[in-house]
Image 1 (cartoon, rainbow, N blue to C red):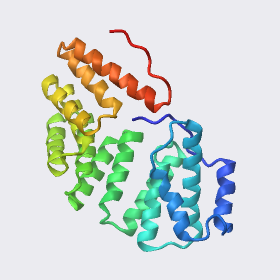
Image 2: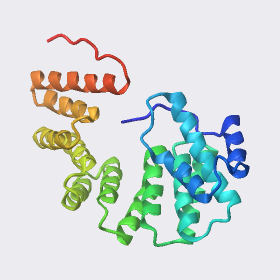
Image 3: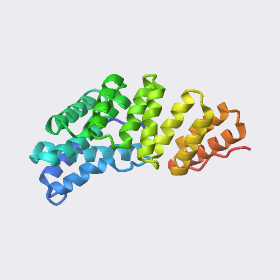
Image 4: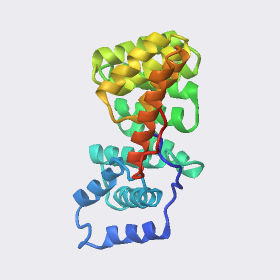
Length: 260
């Protein structure tokens, strides 16, 4: 699900929090406390944009405190830099540049860290559409660790964006072989089939994605589009209604009334 756009910059509140985190032992008296707060940036976000911003700023302040004031080294530094980069990457301008700098620092410190190349490649794909560099990063990540299904899904998304659906499908087949319960792999493969006009395979893949993640509204929308393209109007309408109901539930609002 796409999150609402929010500003990724430290607010005065977050700057105050950083000072508290550094100097206030009652609130954060150990590196372990700060690591937990920093890492919490990966938690499932609220649907409230204000809460998303506050949660993001608190996590980023903790990451900054760890990197800048606690002399981390080795694996602890690598993990914290990756967490901070992931928090900064969705931003624009200096935030995105800082994220790339953190990924590059991790790669310099631990050049065989496959996840660093994957995360940097994913950031380049999602936030700047820098497809050639994103593909290079994913090729390196997969070369370092070919056992990660997520890596193949990300590379497939890049290849599909580059107009190479056959390569994308090969990567998605590999991802599903590695992790048959990875809903994202089925969903992306369905989209790739759909973009090629293969609605039957697309519907089958979206159906499996829905079976694995029945509360993910996007897959109902995708299947609705494929069903409509296949002339299955009633089934498409049912999928659209289900997607709207799930979206309304996630937003905490009542589901819209739909007519048969």
